[in-house]
Length: 592
Image (cartoon, rainbow, N blue to C red; front, side, top):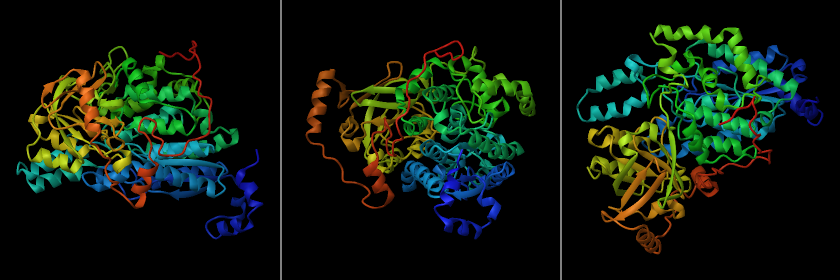
């Protein structure tokens, strides 16, 4: 195979000189050139340690005859960006990371690439770029934080902050908790978006077996990074590329694993975006359909008990795959050059599961207390419901596993707000009563980049009278840490004239998770027949005017113009057409 880097050397003699102006030797110029792309930086604990993994990956590449080159595009922290306008940049940053990775991969003559990332927008940004560029590539997940004392973790700081504001704890007590909430680098200690992304990366076959959710403090993480650097050279030699791995069956497997861990609703944005890069369409309803068949097996925060590092102690994604193998295509290719089934056999024969299982003994836990067997799952019925109705004709998303079952069927009084800031003020001013349905609109892709409404959910959760009974419905989205009857991704969004824009105070909103429906069923506190509701909404629409753009300059203005519908999440460019036919079930590739 002729290397791209060597072909381009013949075209650009200046390039060799410029490289030797850095740390390159004459011998290096003739080696395969490997991009080592990471989001290392001081943005948050998920990225601050990635420089160590960069060095190990580079070492692996170099020892196998390649020349690594490190490039960076640091991500932002959703937690730091919360509660202010910074959150509007969160989802756009995913696409910016993917574009910068593409630029780094193709503007210089790289032959292969290693992408290193941990968290919410960096992982999908890297996976999108890997699929788009289609050089031989491997992803290195950055692992998870260790839990703080007494299971302290960062998402608990919001309610503690409210307690401090109310005088229920002192400033010193709050600081003492903050100091130990993030004791190590890595992703947050719950099954939020960052942890869900790592699971998906491995489930798709783009990361080494057992590499997702490794506690970042363990030396195993750096060993894995070196292994990945070595393995990308094997991928280059065998010419195995992401589009050889990212088949419809691989995405089916990813959705199965997402269901098994009760993954974040944000993956309904990220997985379709990755699939789109290879010409495959993934719809929100597919998450719901698979979730009804595949039970939740993991008892982890925020919907459960344990930190996500315990999943890795149980055997990580491979152990989960063993439990749900009846739902998987085991013959899907992975970055090992082997299939999922072959990888599982190799891990079993090597004694790897027994090797790491002893960590659970340190905590006095049995594997089945954290990772339940398929015969005795943690929860059945799925985790995510896609609701439709006259309030969400094209769908809305609810992580019902994180909500009180009593809210799965409820009728609430609508209290609409046109931005999150007004909604938070409304809660603090006692405008929201138990059983209400708070509407937060004009927070979608076209309006503000689709920020998370996490701060609002934490303000609600700090009120015992509201926590288990008050719904939030928005065309924005939620943090993977959010709890409660929170419905997001309402489509069409309000800025495009979706019905959410037409809701008025004291309308009656009916949520019915079993029926997968979300409807306006009354006005001014009185139920009305469906035909009457349709007539009223049509009348309101004649008076509705689209709001002026909130951003007329900068990246948010660009994103608002380019962003498309949430259901297809086409804010980024499409990849080339691919074979999107899912193979029929066989004995070796069972499927529900």
